[in-house]
Length: 374
Ligand SMILES: NC(=O)C1=CN([C@@H]2O[C@H](COP(=O)(O)OP(=O)(O)OC[C@H]3O[C@@H](n4cnc5c(N)ncnc54)[C@H](O)[C@@H]3O)[C@@H](O)[C@H]2O)C=CC1
Ligand SMILES: CC(=O)C(=O)O
Image (tube, rainbow, N blue to C red; front, side, top):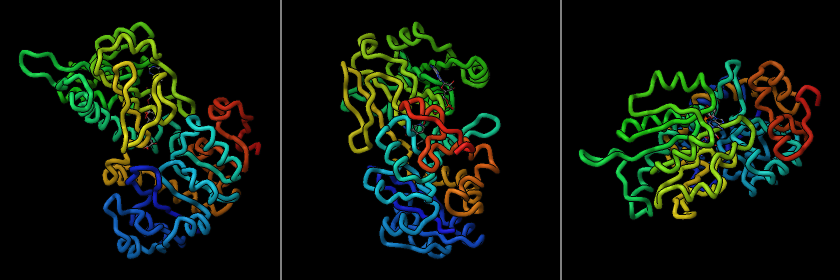
């Protein structure tokens, strides 16, 4: 099968979807891997290394998209890429469809099979292809929060850990999953005062067992969220309902309860964000201010630490790329791979012009067709 790895084109996206070792494995199994020149550069991976691993290097994205049966990417196809997607092709990447109707419509119109990393749910209910990037973003959210709390960045001028005689910052983490737990762990290490909120009591019990003493694990309801907003120097949005638009936990009027110069890092922005006032931003222009509160809503946070993130992502995606490649090209190959693996079947969001993911269909009022009924 022809497998294509285009260079990422989203703003400040330095990850690449395959390591040289991945190329080598696929080539060993008889596949051809087309890699766009300089695709790995942002992660410090040179063309020569891909070539030595057996990749066919090509000069343009059009050649990759034109020849590949399976496209392996990091971020959702950007508008400039949409015309290159074709029927019969499978695209395996982060899509976050619920956050963007235009993307959903473009991919539906292409007739390609869209398999989304973020909805690949294993039999234990985990999200193995989202987890490593959530670990990165959760940890990063605290370092970004620390930066934007600095006064020259329009923040309150608060040091996370305080100093003897002066209280540390208070950090509220909405959502205690992978992003939330990683954020809380790093924030606690900075000696901040931390509260982590979730609606899943089992998860709260677990977090309560493993978190240090400066982390409170609280049930997430409207009253608790409002009380937290009054106290917080930094709020981190980390909730998720897989496939669906993020639940909205903070309304615009709630910002009036917050302190001037407080910072919101809405990590959940890739699924639409969990604050009414969140809108997507980029690494080049990451923040804006609403009612005196600094908002940071970058949709590809791990892209900024491309080298760490590329290795963390490719470690988990390669076995699934291998399964898709082994199943063969076209929609028949994608269906065969999905038939043989429930996690892969759950990750198929669009197939042959139909929406096969329930929450995506519900978000846009589109018809939902079960994958094996297509
Ligand atoms: N902006 C970026 O660059 C990145 C964004 N993300 C996003 O971060 C978000 C969180 O991801 P994960 O932590 O991996 O998800 P997760 O599934 O591990 O955790 C989500 C948590 O939210 C909780 N939750 C759901 N509704 C809630 C509510 N109403 N109140 C409180 N808690 C609620 C769930 O119980 C769960 O524990 C996702 O949207 C993910 O795509 C992840 C990586 C990078
Ligand atoms: C999860 C995701 O969308 C990212 O890592 O960019």
